[in-house]
Image (cartoon, rainbow, N blue to C red):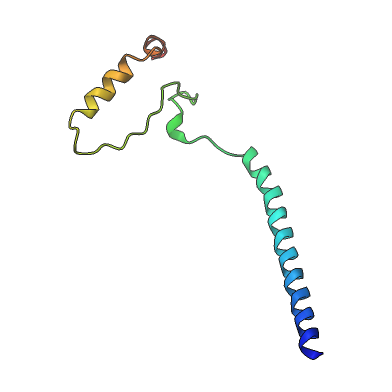
Length: 90
């Protein structure tokens, strides 16, 4: 009889802790939504006047297998459709 009571007691205790943990997570999640409103733009995405840049962003992992990748990327960038628009802004 006593092992069953201990089992029930610890089961209820574990259930209470799990609900407490979930409630804490829900509260943090709700307060996290307010923080996104105050999010700031990374400074590298702004031009000198503080406006968002319009340049296409590209992340490349350069490996030593292709030594002229830099020139290929620059050619791709310079031949992009918005090249004329970028030159007018600067």
